[in-house]
Length: 247
Image (cartoon, rainbow, N blue to C red; front, side):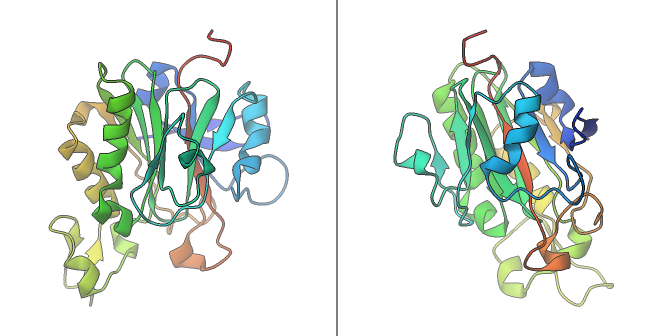
């Protein structure tokens, strides 16, 4: 489970106790932000006021256009740092904060157990099918080969509100739920993400899983399934332990 954190400026985020114990800055944003109105993250700039307040303003936020694929952007690769068409970002640089946006899809944050390399992942059903979680886990291990992984699965649409067609259901051996209440199958994105983390050899004791449903909790989350275009987006962000000056 995640816990809510209230920031001095009024922003409310959810944090992972396991990631928090590493000292890596991270969070899953909610619609409750500083000032009036709902907080929706459209770009990296929308995270800047909170990160400035938290003392992370010197970090460059790596976040770009997502295409429901499986490509992972990497530090030191200029073409990937353009962030056009990447659904996951990994970094081992203390001058970066990696982030993704979601509005029902599954956000996953990863860290090496020494806090020296992290990744943020956006995973809808297409990304899950394409293996974006496994590729992000592999990217962190490549950058920090001596460490294990800790993961946090953030708020997403729950199985009760995620009806899918037979074509989509047929793409998944696990996570498809059918019962007498529903005319069509439903897909449990959270369960699929958890299974893929376990398949990537992340120990179950090293995974925090959110219980919040973006569809059900209109006060705290945007949901495309609930509200359609203009629903607003959450962000999931994470950085390595330490500061750009090496402290």
